[in-house]
Image (cartoon, rainbow, N blue to C red; front, top):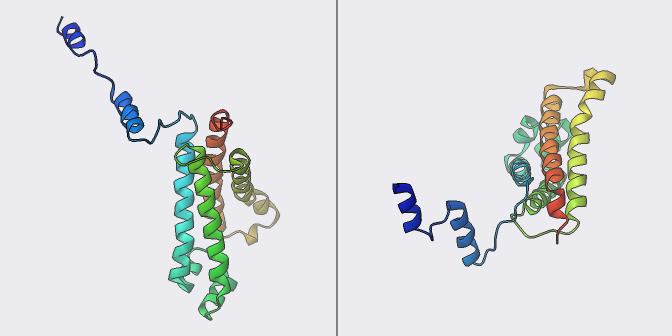
Length: 178
């Protein structure tokens, strides 16, 4: 048959995935490790990069951005008065988020292994999940303290936490290898 002739005529033909791995190896990048949590950790990492960038945007955008993104009256008013501390706090948060994104990318196997990788991903997941889940007891105890921003931000960070937790759990075994 024509299929068998083609197959016999081209014994060196490889699948596109195989060619990509060979190309990566010949370029000196090495094979991309197989990791069942990669997609979740990449999602978590890029979401966290976006959050970090939004915090930098608040520093650049000033008072209006702080108000729009729900930073609170004290921070927005201080920024409006030209005080520097809201920018320092916001830059600190942006830096922490950027480091967390690096840990997600490391767990996904896209950058080198960072120190205490599994511990860090566990703690990052925990922080995001706890922050997101705090909404529910607050709704029961003091619903008057919950505004639209509080609901949306809690749901967003809960989604971040889920992405980190699923990614870390699925990649746990792969991350135990040096």
